[in-house]
Image 1 (cartoon, one colour):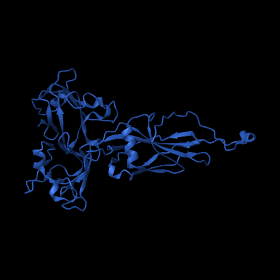
Image 2 (cartoon, helix red, strand yellow):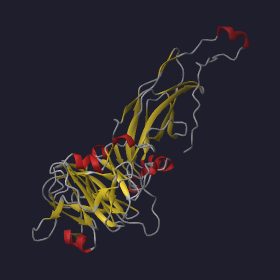
Image 3 (cartoon, one colour):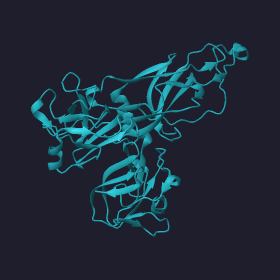
Length: 381
């Protein structure tokens, strides 16, 4: 794949269809009439990429035909850029002529997302456009963009991790059998998947088809994991997990490095809010996805385990446009929550820093930060 550095052509090119110098004055003028527009996939589509499927189709990208004033051979280029980018340094996903679709392989989508700064095991947002041209001129760009969410992978290296599995009635597509277990894709010891969860039990397994490889709720507690509070011990004789949150689509993540096991509502982070600040792992920055996602774990309840740094400040943000500038204007500080009547733990206080951010006064440690909008409480565990 290659970089494309696009210069918008500010004129409508003329196309000579005859090489005979005597016919120059008679050559037809080719005018661009309407730009191609992407029609599939739908904006917001989520891709969790897996190296096991590297040579399989990630998606078929389709667009409407560009219209020109004469019958000509039209070339199309499918472009991808960071969300909010201006496509001046977009990547080329693929090229074709006189066709209104391209099938993009998993490995090619993964490569280009990584080239744009994508982080393995972490969801990022990317904009797509299609460009048309005739003999390299008469260039048209999509007026609209579609945005997709992509979780890339790192190519396997020695000692990288194996996929794991979930079986149980709490994941209806899996059930208590090995016919269709939920696969957790592993990269750099972070396992991720998306599934419909209902209020029932399930268990994690390290080996497909092997009941003896199961890991139940107490196993993760003993290993020092912080677990989303909507996942509890089922107390069913096998101490499986039980999901107690609002049934629906969730992203499941087992971070074997940070030792966290979390669920996040929705196929994408559209419903989430965010934490930014020196007290958080990413500091005061939105660059390279340094903001911390604070996802819904059930309707009205936002929760995330993260390492909080003692003596430092942070703020809650209600918006994230996926760009490196973030959404500073959507911040909610300590005074906002106090004014709304929230109960706030003593380890969080007004930073008195001119912006009334939160200040974390506890010891630096992995903590579970929760905002319950129903009971109007903020807690740290």
